[in-house]
Amino acid sequence: MIRLKQLLHEWTGETWNAYTNWKSHKNDLLTTTILAPEFMSGPAIEVNASNSAFTITYQGPASGVHVAHANGSSGDTLHQLFNVIIFELNPYLANKKLKPNLRSITTKCTKSKRVKNTYTLTIRIPLNKSNTAWQINHRGGWGHDPGQDAVINNSPAWLKPADVYTEVTAVPQGENITTHFATYTLDKP
Image (cartoon, rainbow, N blue to C red):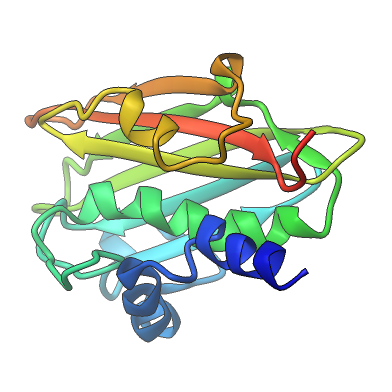
């Protein structure tokens, strides 16, 4: 039971340095509603979780805001939002019998035409009913692709290849963010 708890902390990202950094910035960034860019007072993140989908939206500069980076960097803010998925979705999934539908993930990044250097990135992960509890993991890069092995090597040994999916997010006037998602059960099948 102790080892399962350790694995759960690792898989939910609680042992990641990025998780510690997210916890220290979370209260400053979370909002209940993302407003139109011209009405935002600063960078903000909105998280919505239900039994049918998990959606996270960020609004602010593409870089320059420290959200959830392992080394405290603010250089790739949009990419850091993918870490927040792990920290917010996995605890939600741990007590539910829902499986992330990776092949139906949608991402959309836009740049405001009215407010200088303001981007909106929305990531939506549909959730399906299941007979067991699931978790999600990711590895990726902005302007580079670490490959699917990066997430496979950081997931449980019982991860099935069918439960790995790659999503490419186009950043306006910038390079793509390539993210490899994996989903797996908490208990070894």
